[in-house]
Image 1: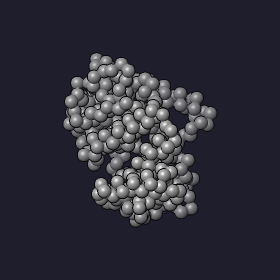
Image 2: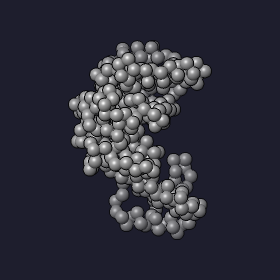
Image 3: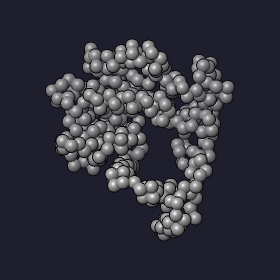
Image 4: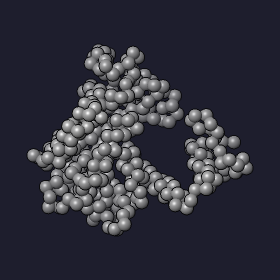
Length: 349
C-alpha cells in the first residue's frame, strides 16, 4: 500500500478504507508512477472534497485550478532550462507611447541575451513585450475576463499561449517559471504584481529573484511609488531599509538587462535545509572571501557562519541542482534584503 502520511506524520485518508485501497490499486495498475505518494494525496483530496460536502462552485474552482496548473506545467516543461523574464505593465499603453517602445526594446535586448519573455497576452505593455522578444521566445499568459478580448497579434496561435480563468493560477505560473521580473508603469494589476512579488520574497515564500522597475528617462511613476514606500511605509517601521535591496529602479535598458542577467553570473538558486540556507553557485569563492562575508554581514549571520557543503539527502532525492557548488548560511530570515547583498557579493567571484 502507498504511504499516506503527510510531512507532519499524520495519515491522510479519504476516511473510507475501501476507497483508500482502491486508489492504491488504481495507481498500481497505471504502472510505474513517479511521485506516487503525491498522486495518492491529490486523488485523496478530491474524495475528501466530496466527503466534506463541497458545493458545485467549490468543486469547479478546484477542478479548473488543477487543470490550469497541469496545462501550464506541460507548456513550460520543454523550456525548463531557459532563463525567463516576466514583464508586467499596463494594457492601456498605446503603441505610440514611449513606454511601449521602451518595453519592446527591453524585450528584444533580453531575447538577444538568450532569455525568453513571459507576459500577458493582451495589448499595451504585453503586446510590446511579445513584439520585442518575437514569437519564438515569447510565452503568453492570457486571463479570461468578462469583456473578452483576443490575444495580441504577436502571440495569437502560438503554442506557448496559455489561457487562465483565475488570476491566482496565472500568478503562480508567472512566479514559478520566471527567473527575473521587469515592471513598467501600470494600473491596479501591475501594482498588485509588484507588491505580491515583494511580499513573497520578503517572507521567504519565494526565492530571491531580481526585480527592475523601469521608468522613462526623467519619468516619475516608479520614483513616486518608491517615495510613498519610503515616506509612508518605511517611516512607520512597516518595512525595513533592507527591503529596498530587492528592487532596482532604472530608466536605461542596458542597465536593466545587466541587473537581471548579472544576478545569475555565479548564483544559481537557494533552498532551506535543516535550518540552514543553502545557496547553489557555479563557483565557490575562496576561503578569505567567505571570512570577509561573515565579517561584513555579522549582524545577520548566526554562529554557524558560512561554509561549503555537499548536496543534502533531500536535494539528492529531488535531483535538485546537483551540478552546483553549495554554501550553507546560518541566516536571519527577517533580513532578506541583506541576502540580496550577499548574493551580489558572491556574483563577483
